[in-house]
Image (cartoon, rainbow, N blue to C red; front, side, top):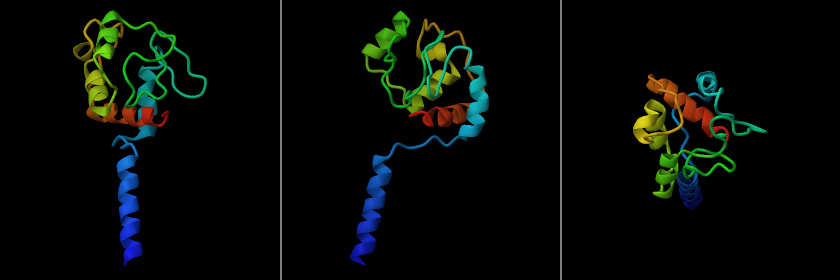
Length: 127
């Protein structure tokens, strides 16, 4: 009985220590991410393009990709502690200019909640 309880405690602790995964489908997110590829890259050897490379973006502080020149408003928000958690990414992917006014990103946003969840799940595969 003690062994079972200690295993349960260990499993709960591991679950709490592990980052939560988006509820989306990473494979479907890869297809949706094709809309983003003109400006962003992910994966081995990803480099900044018109937008920053997005490896490790989940739960990362905004404006921190080395070598990328961010808009003034992104720099200000980053200085104020903006972090790309799931909630903020969801809002940004829905309406980028609502989250970061005067962002350099010209993309209008994704309309479908499932597409947003899937893109976030895809990005999580590059942590």
